[in-house]
Structures are given as structure tokens and as C-alpha cells.
Length: 252
Image (cartoon, rainbow, N blue to C red):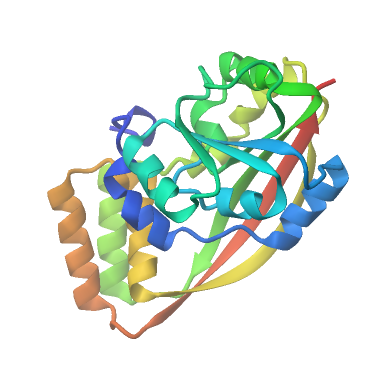
């Protein structure tokens, strides 16, 4: 089973791991996007495919009203705990539970590649106001500290069993197609490279939240985590390097 065919609750199975292991978003990159779009503090925005709110918490600090839409109940439950300042709603990108022209901008972090379609782009165009904005963000892992040959072999085995992670759909660029034929202007782009230092358990949690692992049976995920904990010292700090990319556009 490929990640694309994973059960709809695949990420929800690892919601706590997702919250623990996934990095936050670099504020300097968000500053650039918000400034270029001219989004004011009184703006109303949507975080679409919000997960556990890794981006939502940054949006709440910036804007007067933040809505967070997420299809998975477990992920949304964590978001409601950690980002109480957002208006959390269960829903999908194909049927966004907002009124027409309700928000000034739609943000999507680590999610757009899963639902990029003519229908979802049309829905985004429906819920934003005239000249409303769309912002898409991804963290692309470049490297992490070598964990030793045995641990690396365990990781490779798990990925081979689960298939390619969803990042392949990001790097392929296929997510651009519905935007090219839609009502939005040409994409603008900016990026930063950064190091994120994690504890061993945060790093393991991040691995468990990757789509190709998250959809595997709980027994397999538990066994994977147990083997990694045996092979990697508990006090180890893991350096992960990311290329964080932001794309943004407006309704024409």
C-alpha cells in the first residue's frame, strides 16, 4: 500500500507523535510571506489540513481570527488542546466548512500535496475574499545525523515496507497543476535552510508520523520504535536539516 492509498486515519493513528516530532515553522519565512501579501493583524485566515496545529499556533499569534480545518478527528483533538485560540472545525479541502468569502487567506502546511485537485482549489477560491491569498508551505528534509548502521538498516526496512513518503508528491511538482488552470496568479516562492535539534524521542516520533510509516499496523510501528530505542542512546540529540519552502499567490 502506498501512502497515497493509506487509510484516511493514517495520520490520526500517530497524532501524538506528529505533535511531538514535527518541527514548528520559521517565523522569518512567515514574516516575509505575510508582508508581501500585506496581511494585517485584523485579518481572518484559515489553516487548511491543519493537523495538530503546528502552523496554527503561529497564525493565532499574528491574526485576529484563525480557523483550523482538519479531516482527522484525532489530529483535530490534539489541535484543540494545544491551540485553544483557534476555531477548530472538522472538514476536508473538497468541502471546506466556511461560508463564501469568509477569510482573507488560506494557509496549508505539509498538506496541500494530499488534496491538490481542481475541486479543492475551487473551494479555496470560494472561501477567500476578492484578491484573497493562498499560502503553501513544506519542510523538506535534507539530512539528519547518522544513527549507526544497525539503526539505519531498521529505518530503511520500515520505509521499504511502507512505500515512498508523501514528500515525493511535493518534489514531483504535480500539486501545481490545479493552480495553473485555476483562478490564482503565478506562485511566488521563498525558502530558508535551518537545523532543528531534537531529542531521541522527538526524532523517533517524527519518523513514526511520516506517511509511509504512519499507515502501517500499530504492532509494526511499536516494534520499529522499540528497536530504534534499543539502538540509539536515550540522551542523544539529533540534528535534522530542513529546506523550508513557502509558495504564495492571490486570486486574480
